[in-house]
Image 1 (cartoon, rainbow, N blue to C red):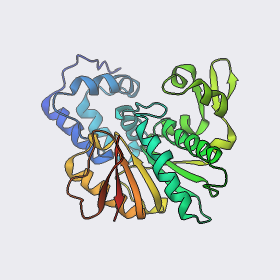
Image 2: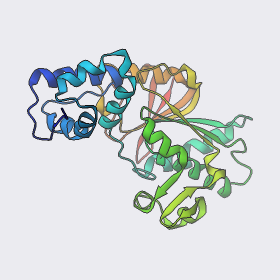
Image 3: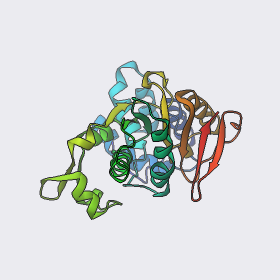
Amino acid sequence: MTARLNATSSVSVDEYQLFRDFLQQACGILLGDNKQYLVTSRLRKIMEQEGIESLGVLVQTLKKASSRALKETVVDAMTTNETLWFRDNHPFRILSDILLPEFSERGGIKPVRIWSAACSTGQEPYSMTMVAEEFKRAKPGKLKSGIKVVATDISQTVLANAKSGEYEMLAIGRGLSKERLNAYFVEKAPGVWKVKPDLMKHVEFRLLNLLDRYSILGKFDVIFCRNVLIYFSAELKLDILSRMHQALNKGGYLVLGASESLNGLSDKFEMIQCRPGIIYRAI
């Protein structure tokens, strides 16, 4: 029998709570109350394909060791991948006007290492590399070592898109100027633009669940973790931010989303007012 779950299907309170628990354990996302419509609308097609008729049966299936691929598909479907080029603008001005000049003055032969956490389809890390290229052109001889961006996400699907560096005009038009399009992209096919190799070589994409260990990534000078912590519980936020502090070099910087803040970690980070914007320096 083919499953027929739809956006108006009845989902019991117990089923919904089971799925909420599964999702939080799997990737940290904490669903709010009364989000049954969101769940059914995002999972309807998957459940029909798998012949699963209820959310409760889905959770039971996901708990089986043989359901790893299905688990990844479900988490992928429930992950919000909203992004655009130079999102919010001021974090990239801070990178260009404050952080890169500071690291450039420090010198050194190693590139500035930046972690783009929850990078989605790649707009954030590629935006960083554009900023670095423009900084080097504006200040010849500075930032000789360049930058290295490690971009991570929990979704295999969005990482594959990011690694390809290919974007259709709808995605290109979300925050990317015509000047930057012409400078950093080539038109691969009508309406499809690809990031130039000279830019792509500075970015390494890796699969990572923020609940996992970060030591495999190495140490960073800057971490961008924007607009993702809002989906986690207060306890998980504290854990993630504490571990990000450990992943930063001493004096390194953490950049959060506009609606996110550090609570209870004043012993690990110093707040820096940038006007506009706030960043946090590891102490």
